[in-house]
Length: 432
Image 1 (spheres, one colour):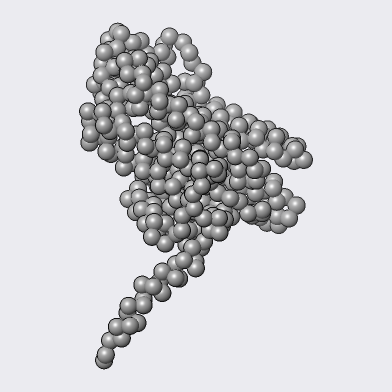
Image 2 (cartoon, rainbow, N blue to C red):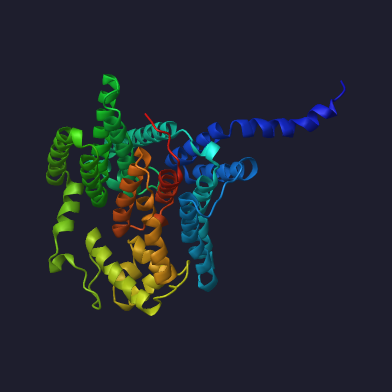
C-alpha cells in the first residue's frame, strides 16, 4: 500500500490549526488541570504546569503592552521570581538555591501565561475552573477523612483526625490544605449570594452543605491563621452583600459557636488556641541559655525563630544571604543563640514569608514581595473575580505571617494560580 507523503506533510499544519481554533477551550482545560493536579502527587502537578507552558509557548499568540494593568502586574510577578534568581549569584549553597528556583518556578510560569494571553482568549471559562477546583478540594478532603477513618480503625487513636495526620501526601501541610478549603468556601459563598435570586433550591442546599463540610475540615486541620481568615471572609461578605447581612450574620453566629466548641472539646485545636493565648514565661523559649530542649508549642518556636532571623538580617540587610543559604544561616544563628532545639535536633525555616524573603534577598526582596501581594488592590473593576482576588490576597498575606507559604510546593501553586487568575483574568459579566 502506497504512503501518501503529501497527507503526512500536512498533518502538523492541520493539528496547529485545530489547536489555534480551540485555544480558549484548551487554555481552560490546562488551567483546570494545573490547579486540580495540585491535589495529587507533586510530579504530576509539575508535569501539568510544564505542558501548559509548552502549549502556551508554541500555540498561543502573545499580547503585551507596557501601558496596561495586566502587563504591569505580570512584570511585578516575574520580578518576584527574578530576584530569587539573582540571589543564586551570591549564595554559597547552590544545590539548595537551584532547588528553590525549580520549586518556585510556577511564580514565573503561571503569571507569564495569564499575563500575555490575547484578549480574544483571555476570557477563559472561570465558572468551569471554579467548579473543578471545588470538586477537587471536596474529593481531596473526603479522601483525607477516609484516610483518618482507616487510621482510627487500625490504631483507635482519635488524633489521626487532626492536622498532619489527615494528610496522606507529605508535601501538603495543614495550612495549605485548609487554605484550599477556605478558597472553595469563598468561591461557593460568593456564587451563592451573587446569584441568590436565580440559584435553584437544590443548588443552594448543596452549596450550604459544601460550605459546612469545608468549614469542619478547616477546624480538623487546626490551623489557627486560616480560622482567622475564615472570619475575615465572613466580614468581607457582610460588606459586599449588604442585602443578605442577616443571613451572613446568622452564619457568623453558627460558625462562632462551632469554632468555640472545637476550641473546648477537640484536643488538637484546643491546644492550638491555648498556645496562641499563652504569653507566660513558661511558653517562651529562652535564648542565649542552654534550656531550649523541651516540647514547645508552635507559637513559642516561631517567635524564637523570628528573633534568630533578625540576627541574620541585621548582618545582611540589603540583599540577604542568597537564595540557597537562608536555612543554613538561620540554623547558625539558632546555634549562636543556644536555641539547640532548632539548630541541632530540628531543621527550620523562619516560619514567616516576609522574614524568609528578607533572609534570602534582603530588604529589596521584601519590598518586591509586599508590592506583589498588594497588586489585587490596584485592579479597578468591580467584578466578582476581582473581589474574590482581594479576599484571597488578604488571607494569603495573613498566612504568610506564620508560615513560609512560598516555600511549600502546594501553596506555591495555590498562590501562583489564583493570584494570576484573580489579577490577570478579564472576567465575563456573569459566572455560576
